[in-house]
Image (tube, rainbow, N blue to C red):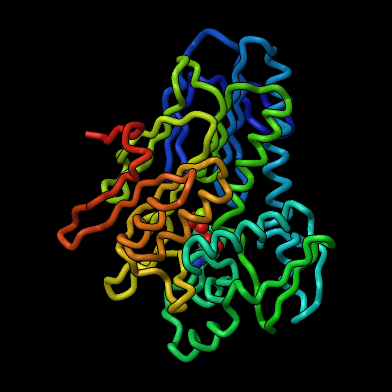
Length: 353
Ligand code: AMP
Ligand code: MG
């Protein structure tokens, strides 16, 4: 094992990647092309990048992997609410109608987030941040188990609404039309970081790679076995087992689920995803929602947003969005599950036994 700048490059055959919602499979081999891999942390979660090539040597691969990881950390520095001086924190510190200039990447993500709000009928809304704080969701797990009083929820709901975000595309500036508003890019930034990392790898001539940030995954080319990359989606109910394996080529997958980060009060399960219509953690019966598409940022945002809606509504939206496919899993009263795989994805999904 070789260490560079605190990052770990680990021979591929040692590892099967484990991440919160997805498991990377199909990449075990002891010989063959040059391989570089990094396992680290970013955005409060796991970061894994694996590349291989028959044409490039190991050091070229390692520097590409390093550049891709740096790009992920750059996105984190711009968009994390846990980093002092991030664009998100600067925007959130501004007063009503005060314009704040942000990095073009942050601007792009906010634009995409608003697009995702429209696609999810308002369920995805980055202005839920005051509610996320009110309910006490911290950087990793819940930090506060008490349920806020109804009057407080109503009061804080007044600060929520993506339509009150104002954007100036020419100046790359952002402002809020109402006092007390704040944004949270936690539902989209991981996906965007995957998009960026893949784009860095492509620019450096990498043709086969898999990138994962906290369970959001992007792939290019093929796995070392010469077939499509296979990405496993964890079972939302049966802990430790896989629900499905997806075959992927030059695309992205994101999964959200109410089993990922939640708390229980009086026997009721509250997810870390907030319903912007009610101001409360979502109580829909969707246990897991996977979106596959050509943009990881969009897949990430849709996976988060559609989880808020009913099972039927999430399916209807996914079936009608061009270029996007998905799997919606719902929890049944008897403890079992029911699921729907969109038409375009059916041939590419292998259900686990
Ligand atoms: P994900 O892990 O991608 O499903 O994103 C969950 C994170 O998105 C939460 O931890 C919050 O930071 C944020 N979030 C929660 N509810 C919403 C929502 N309705 N719309 C947008 N972001 C949300
Ligand atoms: Mg998301």
